[in-house]
Image (cartoon, rainbow, N blue to C red):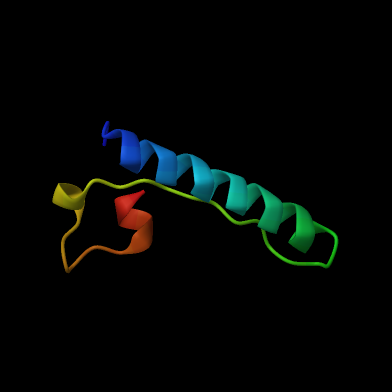
Length: 52
């Protein structure tokens, strides 16, 4: 979660989500959100809402 490559990808994904959200806001769409979740917090029986 603190690796420079992970953080760079996180930053790029956040920018992408902002651009996508800006675009969809002008076309009646929903906002995009990026969430960084550590692999050790994920289990098969979890929902997306449960992870966030």
